[in-house]
Length: 341
Image (cartoon, rainbow, N blue to C red; front, top):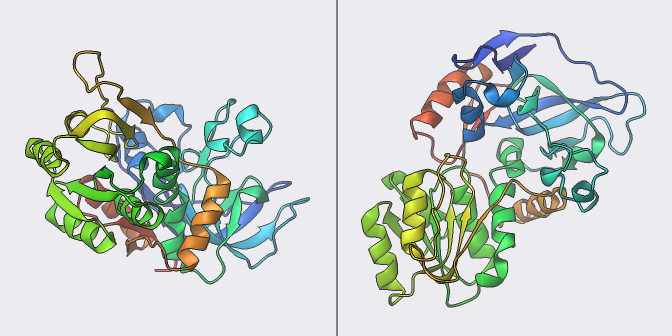
């Protein structure tokens, strides 16, 4: 079968032929229908140790597929069921996993495409049926990225939901694969005023289409605009979906007393907070992925037409080029690999 793998540190992804996997006891084989591309994949391919993952590794941690075969003892799902895959594979028994937070597994969370072979292929193996979420008649190309591009901002928003009531102002920094879904979720779930920022005019247009009340070009001047539109108070909540030093600095500049900055992007930056260099009583947090229960909620929201992921499809042969476009910031919404193309 065909697969897109990261094989050699320092080189880009490669399209190769590999053996079709066989599900072991308790596992499930999926015929992949779609797999989203993510900046997290770029992170793995940009660091000298590939985050310690064993290579070669098939990429793709946003899977959609159809159940093809059940391994011995696997139950709870039927062959032919269209599903997406919850990507946080925890131990299932630690304190966090028992609370439904496998993304925070105390024994170490792995993921397809981030530690084990992922979905950028014709077929993939899922470790257990509990990580499968049926999607009914949802378009798998749009549904695949619910597993991260929607789940990650959803978790981040839920973590500060009491602060997003009417009369507040929220800044979304970065209207990429995650940020454009965050705008939709904020519009559906809260009464806050949404101000989206990005360096790309076309992404600001997407933010408007997704429900942003205001859009601003990202830069130092944007913070002054936020202070102006909030009568000097600053934004109540700022979500940084980029996570580089410049956006973290901008997030802090947009903040006021008792504001909350949530860093979601894995750009390697951070917010420098001290008693004398930040607004008083400010909070800064990070947010990693989300829980399986929240993913089922997102599927229901998508089925009701409340949210959607903007996508651009690529064949598996085109995926290496798609990663290059992602790196250049030329993807609007989410790039998705589609094996059937």
